[in-house]
Image (cartoon, rainbow over all chains, first blue to last red; front, side, top):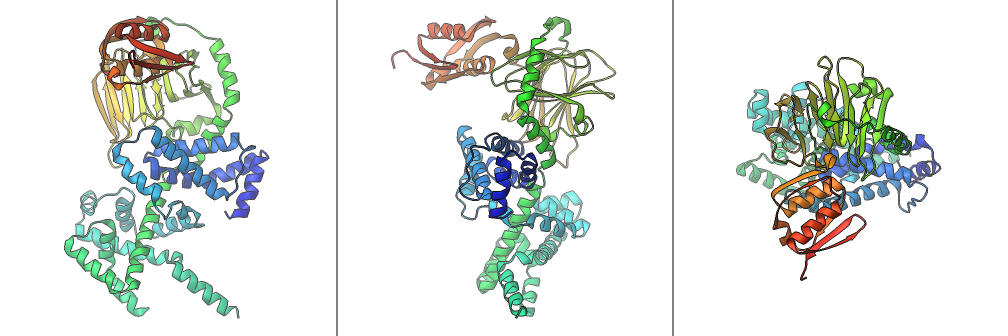
Length: 196
Length: 347
């Protein structure tokens, strides 16, 4: 959603259009939860933060003024809410390092969600992996298992895990390489030349 | 281009290993010299790292279910009209003697989320009733369709069907509640609270589920209750059977379920307002009072929390209890609305 689409949608929400609220919710719920999760590290809590945000957005829609973009406003609100929450909960040491890291990181992970369609493309690419490779990759990246643990779980050798992971990385890199900024530049250049 | 592909081909396994933090010292050295070889290689590593990070975020985001959450948010937004309902319910209070019904008493503390209440929710969601209690309000003995009763502690939501259908009676809870369940061995009463399911294999019980808690706790007074926790995904479901005086603790973080004897006599104090302290540190007493009476107690000097109290209070107002504590330990007490401040006298 670009700046103007966001502005238009939010104007409709302000005027009490429930359908526009639903559109916004369905589009941003997952990204905002994922973003909140970076701070709170608890699925339920992340959902609570995101849900609270949407409830408040609706209840206070008439008084909310957004001077930046809707995108920025949403991610910033979630971030502030999370940081307050953590401060309030007198955060435990186990998370504090991660939080500092997340709060200060210059490459904000919310950027990920601002690349239109990236999540869908990742999903499509992962689903193109052969079954076994997909499972090896999922166990590593989703469940965070070590190679050894994956090998044990699937009764295969660590060498096989290594090979599968390598192949998966190569495949996904190829599939998703259009997000490489250098290639995008290349495409723009190519297309503008072709247009001549 | 051709040359680059060849070079990378040899490195994919290693690259994946390196990014996953699986490379040993030798491999790290190999990778580092590869990275130092050219700016191109360095950029390739960066790109792969970014890709893997994004895929990680994708996996994370896939765990959230926006459709169910939207329903929940919409009900929450409509809570104003629900609150009107609730006052009708609380107007029709039915006071039952505890002894008559309470074959089982259990307490659950959980971060419950409606999102996780799948299964029956989908089939019955159209005919669901929802009752929400306000922040510091206790709604007593609300009648459920099967003749069971529920008492809600503050800031609690219960979701139940207008009619129980099928072989079970299922409700969902977020917050804290006490159930008096009508006996019906043919149709078990099941409460879903967060990632835990409590099945009452008999008669009556009490559930309390507080958002924000790290654990789910179930305490049984009498009777028999089964608690099912959702374990880490690859493992099978975990469950324990509880009988009188036993307590199950489900840790949301470790996904473990532990059974032990309940040693907190005041776990249901929020409902009965009968509180017993036996050589209890004031730190515990204050926490207990905060929960029971929905007040805030600020202790200025942490040393005060170490003082030990033995006392019993039956249905006394919190001001009375705090006054007793103040006189017993010669403390200073000030109050504003529901916020109490306790300090040493000489400071």
